[in-house]
Image (cartoon, rainbow, N blue to C red; front, side):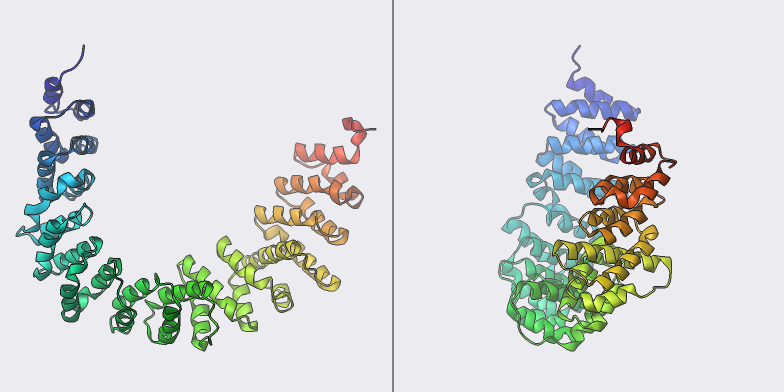
Length: 458
């Protein structure tokens, strides 16, 4: 028997949350009249989260002026979950929700005014909407003011530029929001304006200017940022440095680098944000003296992407880097990091066919062998893979080390490459592995030592 809309409507008033949720979901397939929309809007306040979310989906599905007006009532709720759900529902309703929010822009409650403006900033806007929002650029509440500015920026309403400039001059706390708003206009803020903001006493204003400047990609910006670097706050400096590195990489800059840039980049190597650390590494490519190379080596081991960026620089300076890597390091963690760096460099050199002198290669292979037990499994596998392409003395040393590794996956992988290098180099190792605890390794070692037992005879 087909259930009717009237029956589903009655179910919305039961006490069982499962029945209410099922009824709401069933109503997705029926055109909803005002009484159903009123019931669904009321259920946005239901104690059960599933009921509330189903009610929201129904209102969005059948969005119209009535549904939006009913949902908008709940942005005044003292219950933050209900208020936020009502706001999310209205945003999903798109055009239907715009006029429903008009009454709340002028609410006597400053928090409701702000929330209504925040929601309108996420909805399709026209001149009428923006005018209603812009009318509150004289609002007495600071939070409402910042919401207005953000909404004007989101709407790219350039016609309010002069009003925003007046606010910029008279209200310092609004300056970051105004800078971000300007950056969204079709006519971008001038370089002079941003540079003035970059010299503001407030570090948050500097940060806003720095972030907007970071989006500019031109030689003039690069030159000015190099000049302003020493005067910006510690809060804004990482943003400026990141932007500088991007600009240096994109522009054919041949000017002099300020000495302070190297110091700032080296300091940024310790930043908590890894994207800034990677930028610092890339920027230090322009300062590859002994001090910088040492600093880079000592900053390996934090994250693979950082290590790869460091290695891409170190690979070009083998004579300077090798002594740093081969020195004894304090602690297993440091040795592991240096060992991984050594492996990554060896792979880079092997790819470019760069060859170390035999005596240095001997030391280098012994160093990797010493670090081998502390390396992660992926790096150990990389060592074995590289070994396949090395001359026998070096390949034998590394593969022999891998054949003794505690991880059976590494031992198994190393066994597979022994015939490619020459099993005669590994007879003793393979005999030992015929008694390995891992059956697959025992069988593999036996197969190499006694191929006739496995049907491999000619």
